[in-house]
Length: 491
Image (cartoon, rainbow, N blue to C red; front, side, top):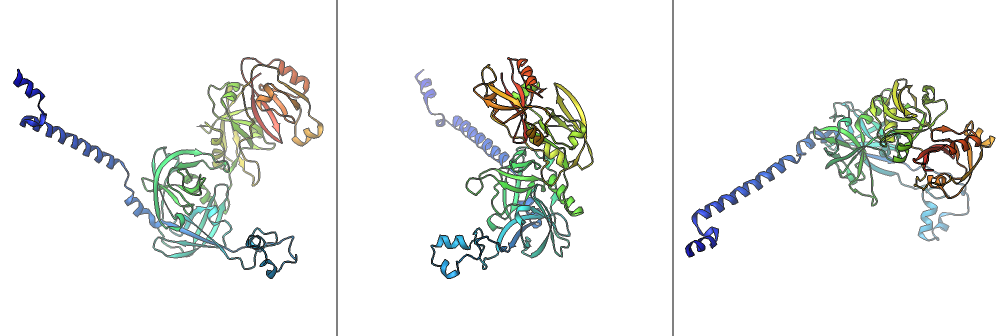
């Protein structure tokens, strides 16, 4: 018994058999670790061959802009160069600078900038960002073999921030392979080649963070969001997938420091190539136009319109003489599908309409008074100014307890009705504590609809208010500063 006790309490490694077992276990553990490391290494993408195959078609773009002489209402004032030299340096810079009210200096130096681009045809067509070449007097393209060739600006599309260049005397140049941004998946590996801070052919990699992003300054570009390191100088460069295909044009970064912060945006290549073909073939870009003002469908709005969940684009206003008006679209309609594609966010609709060829017929599935219906619209051409599908401004939609609406209204004055093109409605004169204030209704707002019922007079307004349900939120259509939007009110 004592002998057995000693054996059991002895270290495992003190016996030959036990030592063998221990070595076997440790070897097995090491093999598992090495195997798992090998699997992890194999799962990470290797970009070396992709970069070698595609770098030659990526170019550095440098521009030169000559400062323009500026007229000034202060020109002729009694300040000469000798007098300016007596002023502090700050004031000298102010009076001589480009922003000076006294006009720019006659000796101002040309301004130079730098960006990236990529060649899409063997005869020298290049895609880049509009903001890279905007206002440039001279454009030079530097290839990977260090050749520097002059380029001509063929055309630009500021709405999508795309510009098309043509390398002069371009012949048998290397080109990129164009992919499809529509096939991109969130989490997919992508990489960029560009010239950040002037460092040619710099490669950075990351993943697709999101697709279909809508930025405040852009209504017609469903941006690709990535965490690829993009910095000044990367603008206009290509974003590649792991098949070596261009899927986007690096365009913008979100930053508070001026540098990369992990949020970058690229123009989908499908949209960019559509712009390229139009500029190349006809020298201009035309987009489809529906002619509505839209807004997001919040949870409360979804409840008031009978939707089970927030989705779609709520039509706040139909523009007079627009394709939407001709097709019978109405304010209060919620667009759920466009040509069979679901609308989840209101920002999904403008790019879909913009990509539709002018004159084509699109089928819209809308929710109206709780029922779904299909409406066919012949798409028009987006005007140069205005007429865009864009989110309508919304006020705060805070909840409130059941109480009187807390506002007084009067008939819309004739001059206001004429200016706004209204037939009826009531104008809000005063708003006190209550549901109206909590919904965001303010004095001078014009109410044209409550709970999907038209309001054309004060009498009708009172009748509609008296019949409001007290167990759910209702929608209120208001016109503020000429723009229509829907608010949510809980009586």
